Image (cartoon, rainbow, N blue to C red; front, top):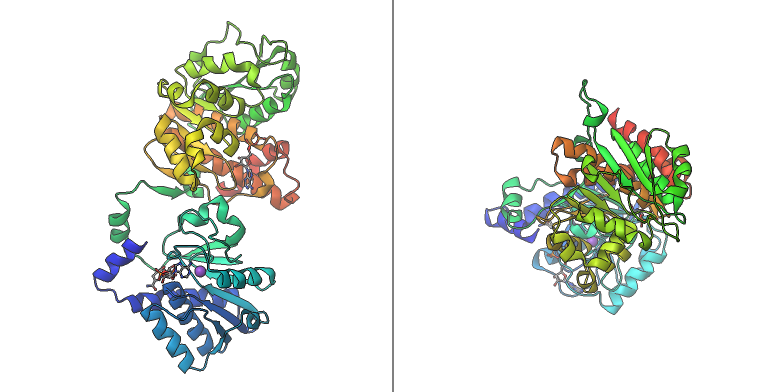
Length: 499
Ligand SMILES: NC(=O)C1=CN([C@@H]2O[C@H](COP(=O)(O)OP(=O)(O)OC[C@H]3O[C@@H](n4cnc5c(N)ncnc54)[C@H](O)[C@@H]3O)[C@@H](O)[C@H]2O)[C@@H](O)CC1
Ligand SMILES: Nc1ncnc2c1ncn2[C@@H]1O[C@H](COP(=O)(O)OP(=O)(O)O)[C@@H](O)[C@H]1O
Ligand SMILES: [K+]
């Protein structure tokens, strides 16, 4: 962002003019959020840099429009432009207070303490003020980032403002899409102030791309519309290998996720003894009963199973580590593969990187952080940035790696990362990952026939899964989204976007 701004300044855009433009847009937005008629008294937190400068311009404009503005500016040294705005605000008679307590009676606050220039932890006195604000129930709009968050990692450096809204300026800051930041960001929106595309491209050309998954991109990757003359074998055949006597539900949820993908043919390999349960739930699927060992895990696939007849394999949910022989066999196969849960644990035990570098076919790994640590102990050890970590994992293995969490990050071996920006904590429940594995597997089996890029199925699956969770949470509360219910919301969630 600094480099992009720098190019605009070097080309002749005055710094003060850009600040005026940006702050004008912020002013318009905050007036809509907090109208004068109901939110007259506004406190403005002003830091030493240009984030503070933006805040001072907004303070001035709100003052001129009749808001009762109170400025809290706890720094003696300000950047030059910020200093000028501070001086002008004072000349207009805008109130300046030295004690944070004076802001508690405000109707709302604007946070312009720090933006992307924050380099170190907040000092004790600033941290104390931030902690106090966080205890009030006064809404806060943060400019660019909640002050205290690191712009890339999203980590709170000491502490950070818990914003109600964050108005991110120009380009999305990566930190806002990190799990770390979610407690602080509130509702995030982008204020587009017309950065020249040529400058953005010139600066970003050398760095691997980080994208937000959008509804448009996710929907574009769906296997829709179907060809009028298609038939079931042209719509992909997925083999799901999952479940054990102990974890029957994992197999059912994986299969229901796969069913929702619209895959042409679904085969589900489970231990022989649980075959009737699966058949009862999924009349359309081909349930393959497998020989099982004494613990009720799949011992091996029946001889009749030809792996080469499937377009993709999804393997792992509910298998237990006792099914390692089967997992090793599918890893050694030449089929596109989604590995999850115990599939990942078996892979970690076999040695993640040496095993995967021998695979010829595409592989998708879908770990949560615990599984990620087992798969990639070295990357996880020093991890401060999920996005960098998942990118390294993909680069080292040649696999597409999806790191689960509040904001799922998907990395492709060329270094590109996609982050799904919206989801719901309602999904933090046992079994919701199994649904995702099946869904991605079903999309992958269809994509393989259309030669779509592997990561397309992953992005679309992640987005769709989160949309289903959000729709279910909206109708049933965040407590009402068990994994089975989630499978029932996949179709309605998609339909609401296709209308
Ligand atoms: N020209 C403009 O008007 C534009 C302004 N923007 C704004 O400018 C901001 C970036 O401005 P700056 O680069 O000045 O940086 P910030 O305003 O984010 O703050 C950095 C300043 O605080 C100091 N600092 C860093 N960590 C500190 C700490 N822990 N305790 C005390 N002081 C600390 C730094 O030395 C620097 O002076 C953006 O976040 C955004 O709000 C841009 O987004 C868009 C264009
Ligand atoms: N706080 C959260 N916000 C949004 N999504 C979440 C959150 N916590 C978990 N999830 C999602 O829920 C799913 C959980 O998967 P996983 O951990 O594999 O569970 P299980 O193995 O029990 O199915 C993942 O898709 C993950 O991204
Ligand atoms: K801020």
